[in-house]
Image 1 (tube, rainbow, N blue to C red):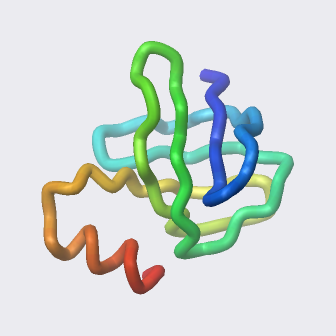
Image 2 (image 1 turned 180 degrees about the vertical axis):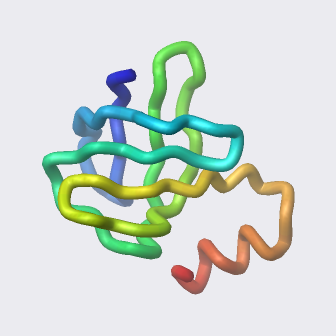
Amino acid sequence: MVAHLVKEGGEPFRVLVRNLSYEGCEILSERALVVGQSVELEMPRAGRIKAQVRWVAGDRAGLSFLLGNSIHEERRARIGV
């Protein structure tokens, strides 16, 4: 599925979403991403979801959705791990 990714303070750009689950997804992106980076993923009919980049391998990256239901999740996003 084609979606848009927004880096902090940046403009949305297109990505391809693969392996979507309740906890996260894999994306294909032509733009560089950094592990620990906070982003927002905008998917059709789902709106924007806050996420954190968990791994990067070339043009692929894994995102972990930040659903705001865990103190551990908030801390992980704040310190970038």
